[in-house]
Image (tube, rainbow, N blue to C red):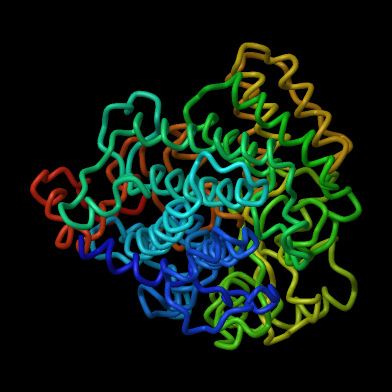
Length: 535
């Protein structure tokens, strides 16, 4: 298990590092105390477990820990990799585009940057979560320890869910197919010695649902809120609303429609109690999406000016995404919307201004910002959804926070799942209520078959969640295939990949094959696939 061991050591260090977050002020002990002393201290003082959970969260925001390249900056890089694989994020075939291999779909092999980084980042967090779970047992009755255990369970479930979507086809019809290695606090030592086989898709999702259910129960019983354990940017942790949101995502993937609708509804209600609500139409009609304290964010990655990804200047999410700040995107690796999708957005929808139009204009930009965009040579359809850090045009300080879940997603899940559970009329009504209240006053969903409502939600998700690392997975779960006709991709990347293609399921990295003897002997890795032929 050399591959797992590679990630176990740094993940364990993060999970046990009591000074992993500079603003926690929970470091009464010398930095050289033993691991055993730290573990004993955690049992004596539940607040010390905060350091371990902070280490788990910190694994999402890492600097060149796997690839040691400029596309290696933790989970936000994985968001870009997946979006570039899809249909809706158009980018140029340029030397500045560090995600070009995924945009051209030449990354479906055991040595690609995407599969290496995906495996590395998510299993780092799995191991960090396991370290916390090994210390905080399921029978704890301390409210704060219950909260910390819930964090580790929910973070690990998120990792397993993301891994499952990349390494096997959608749940329905593939329940018995091999998926990923379920490394937990219960089997990690045996796996390190003997290796570990892939669990089935059904086993993987069963673990995800069970762990999220335990996390929800623990958060409910404890009554502890993130803001009670950390005052600065508490949305770095998983609240009860977010735990419901994660289970809503899992149930959506499993096509457990009634459960998905129920969980999304519970997330909306609980989020309201936590002070979370959708962006208003006026708020959405301007660049943003750079601050974890936004009232629409349920969960996100806080980024500090002193973080290594920021001091690097260019190895970070805003560098590769942002159009109006210093970085790779600003010098040619622009991120643009699928032109056919843009054409489908009516002028009455405030989100149309999240991108420049064919004339390079966005109605969401002030005169100053529009002048900057035009003067910077931003091409048509370039995104202006993401504002630069602290809204400073041209800034080289790329300390913007990164969204992981917004409340708007829950409204869309509830509408789709309600329709697919057998009530398309109510589903269409929920969709109409959300979009007309918060994005487009002229919008009205058409009530038809469940699948017709689902397809309308799909379009709304493509618009609302653009650039947030979620849209590609909608194409996969809905078996849509990747048709880039009319999207505006370079001619050599103009593909039409059918659903079920081996290109839509990554092979597990070669380094894992080499280091995991049990997996190697089983010989059941996913096949590699060659870059497709352009249309």
